[in-house]
Length: 571
Ligand code: FES
Ligand code: MG
Image (cartoon, rainbow, N blue to C red):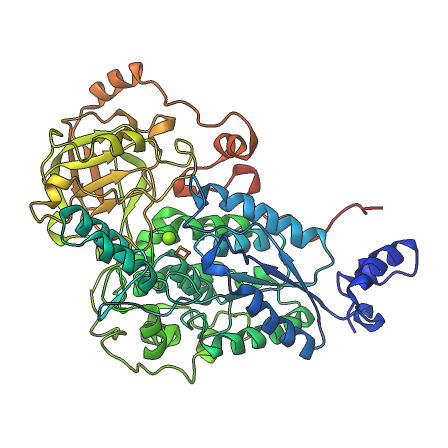
């Protein structure tokens, strides 16, 4: 048998081996668990404070069963869990911290292969980033979406419903009692958001990259088939260790290209760009913001899921799941790249290509929208780019010039947006500053800022909005996000004033502030940076080292991979 990495801990016949084994035995482990079999770390992002992942303790048991069946030694460990709904000021601030936690927990321990249990938005990229920087055999078990929300005879989608109901409450279309009732109707089972929000986008990304067993992304959290595939994943990781199938063999440039195209075909979240870029940075694959545009923008939208469409993840699963989509766009993909199964996508999906509901999954030849991928815009307002998700935007607004109405920061926005005297109409462009990685800090999901009440009262539901922040993958609208460089570090966005004209032209991939270079240079002389929001602790480290959105917003010193070697011993 090969000698695995864990034998450096458990395989020695000296004081060190005694220390490494003896304390482990306090958990009741028999002698032969230390006989050199593959040790499988189960990296669990379970937490009751991350409701989307709260069922993962249970899923871990299925994974363990599989590991044991295949002759491995499973050891479950927790890492920092990031819940989108509760964490302030934004879970994104801590994505890189959780990635550090994952990386060091994997590298520092006697682990030969790792299973990442993920769910809520940031728990997937953070664990993948960390694992990529260690480069051991790695497989992902996505926790799965909640069952469809059901409210008064209608299917409602997590997040997407909240934005709609919030507007309806503001205009009086909905009473508070109805609003409160909808809370329990939306989230009625374990699992993550069941729209094509960021969590579902990340689950799809994982499968597209070849990092999970095929067909896993869309299985609802509570469907028995989720446990079944979790158990199979446990078996598979043991084989991967024996085959030395490291994550770097799977995460190739081709795999990233596949992920970009598949993300476009499913109408994935704009957050995908930031997370995929950060993962690529860890594994050393050259990927930049223009790749997303070149590979993704012309891709057709095949999946009819909220927020771009009508259905939800449960419907996606019953309609055939991701294999059916991959099959439809196979001519666009690298079908021969290797995945965690040790086989190619083509082999993985050979028996699961059928579409069972053509209202949910469209075909490549007759797509829902012909060109729908996230588009990257550039111009003097975003020299290093910004993004828009056309499938979630209003077609009539995709070419638009409007007067800027500027909010200097999120507090300014909240204080004035519903003021009846605010000088704004539906042709204006709402500009929000100081919500980028450095400025907020952490680049929160506030870019889809709700419209002023007086505009909603007119029955208007969309306006052009621009910021250096992100938006929830469950949100929609003509929203321009991730402006880089951000306002707080002196990007042009920081120089925009009320009354400036801004031109958006999605077809031309252009975003332009109609102010001369000379005038901008003048404004720059008197520009004052907003206050720095933290002077100690992790937030301070983050502010000082975070890269801009177009680079994936990773901390600069975390980019790259250090491998799994630990140079010194602990005793
Ligand atoms: Fe966790 Fe949406 S809040 S997935
Ligand atoms: Mg989200």
